[in-house]
Image (cartoon, rainbow over the protein chains, first blue to last red):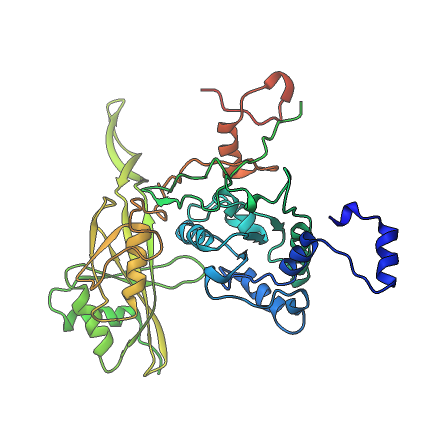
Length: 208
Length: 224
């Protein structure tokens, strides 16, 4: 563990041409710099995602340019756009098909909460009702810089994940689910309307 | 080529299609776009005439949409003769009349050949019941296919002789018709920091009343 090595000693060794690291650092360094997103877009946020992938903003600088057309090869799901209730089961199914470790970025107001369509009958009030989300990006749509920021946030999160111990990363714990039930089409709404194991909305207590 | 007036179109269409009953529906709004109301029985024949007539050649259906008209009460003033104080007088009396609701399909027709249009035609269902029927114009205008499916999905109008009448936007298991005015979406209110209008009404049903703390401006359920 690098944390257990004295920083001064490590710098001294580095000056002498000896590079000291840990498995965890090496492993996470490789993982965080080759995040492969799943190639799919749902609405106007997808256009910003495309712009982020193009040369001006160039997500390749962060190792995220390999958009995969198959969930089996993807590490990251960027939920870019409005999730309609008709689309939600497919999103959950795609998430279930991704191999662990997998991460989700919820991009834009719609993917977070339903956004301007929140009170409508056909839009899901946030993808975090069915799958766990790692990074939320507000915006309508968020600019490419915001997506890059979320990407760097995710890299920071991956960097901090431990391989061993009690605080090890969730995907290394066999008790943690990596698949979540796909909601069914009901007569009036999706059934269930949210997965209580995943969805923990903040309880809003009114101030007196 | 200037388009002839709707009255002329109506007369020629009625002459061409025996038994057709067409009404010109005026539009008093600033748009001033009157339309032709076709009778459901001969609608296909009239639409075929509009498409194939060499003067009209309305060969392009650009848009099909639905309208939901609820039951409404119309006040009418009628002069009634009444005997007041032994004298016969004419008195104005207001009567409320119930106009039953119906669903409408509205088609906007243009001519690519003659570069004129639009001619707006509409059809009305008999009532607002589930599975209420209209003839489909898809056999005449192919572009109406998906839009008639959309009207079926969102308003619940069944188009007879439509080649593939399924829901197009909502899922197949869905039973409601969300664009109908009496549609109520599932009650899944979520916290809003600044609710207003319809959302405020929803919010009121989901808050517990605390009038002693909240004062007059508070959000609380209506009594009763």
